[in-house]
Structures are given as C-alpha cells and as structure tokens.
Length: 96
Image (tube, rainbow, N blue to C red; front, top):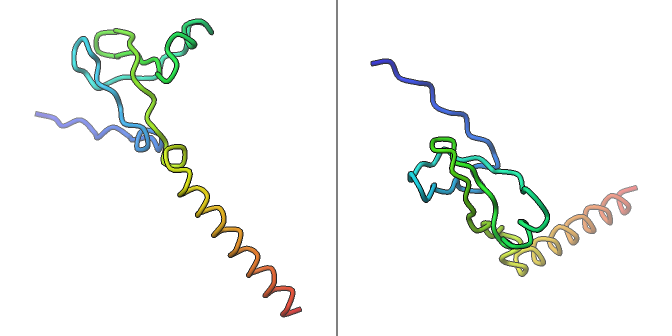
C-alpha cells in the first residue's frame, strides 16, 4: 500500500485549529467567504467554514487570540520591549 505524503501545514493552521464538520465529522475544512454583510452581522463572533468532504457550510466560534484574551500579557510585553529599546538607545548614545 502506497503512503501519501504528509499534508503541508500552514502557520495560520497552527494558531487556529481546524473545526470539525457537524454533518460528517470531517476535518478537511476551509474558511468560506461571507455571502453578505447581513450574514456576517447575524453570526458575530463566528467564522464561516466549508467542509471539503461533504461540501456542507457551517459556522464555528472564532478562536480567542492570546493577546486579545489576555491584555495584561500584551501590556507587560509591550512595556518590556519599550524599556529594552530605551536602554539600548541610551547605551548607544552614551557610547558615542
């Protein structure tokens, strides 16, 4: 039996796990474009998906991003970056 090559994994797929189709339990899904602005408003906080196995179109919740879910982490990370850049700039000016 011939083995198929492993599918390539996009970086966005690592951050956003693939949803499971509610009709066939398939995981071969892709994002589907919104049909209209009204549809997007009706499904706020969700993303449209299309199952490539059974062609069923469905919605799943948008995964929470790390920085959006934890603003404290974003604030600490941003302020740390600012302090490091300030120290580097002061040391560079002091050296000159």
